[in-house]
Image (tube, rainbow, N blue to C red; front, side, top):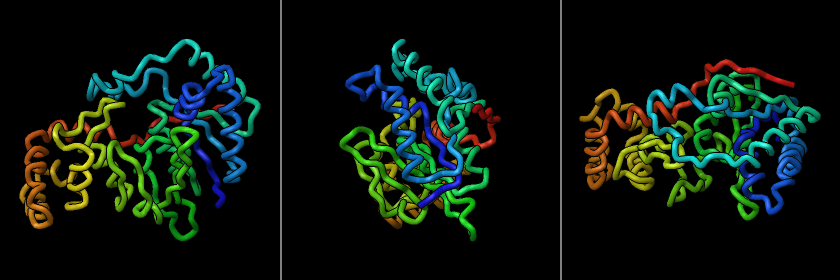
Length: 273
């Protein structure tokens, strides 16, 4: 399968090359090998290596000051490795990209360009971007969910195979969800690594069960269709009504979580050679 655009979550790949390496001095070399392997496997016409904006997303931090606050500080050696990676990329067949936001937002914005697209990342937040291609496939967005270590392989996720592909989410394996459902899943369950609160007491399993019982549940709760949600969920599984009541009680937290999870695909982008 070939793609017009390959977009790589650079910070995520760099993080794995550095922290997963037995010899961290070779992290830049590992990054370049990973890039070249992806290009060889998927034959893109254009490759964009997308970096996070220094300091992260001001808009998300304005919503929640604790957003990503628990992430460990990058060591000095890691920052040096990132700089070395950026220098080596200047001699590769790719473009480095920054934007007025996080890399996830820039990746979302790039998906508006003519495709087909392949996003390479381990970040489950990006599953929401997967979409079918239309008549000529030019709007198609697939995701190569990168393995977290050498023992876990990459998974190619497409609009057609997403629902049947098991994906690890916290303590459970998820199947049967549409791309948009992943926004709801993260909004309800939260994400401790990013500081997204979710709804206390819901958890991964509860969030998954609510979405299966009532697709689109987060939007329906945010527009205060409590009666409709309660009717649908009670008909599917009355045991879930305790979770519905928790969501209604903590509606403001749900709204904030959903805004943190949703990607801003209108950020300004700077493309470098």
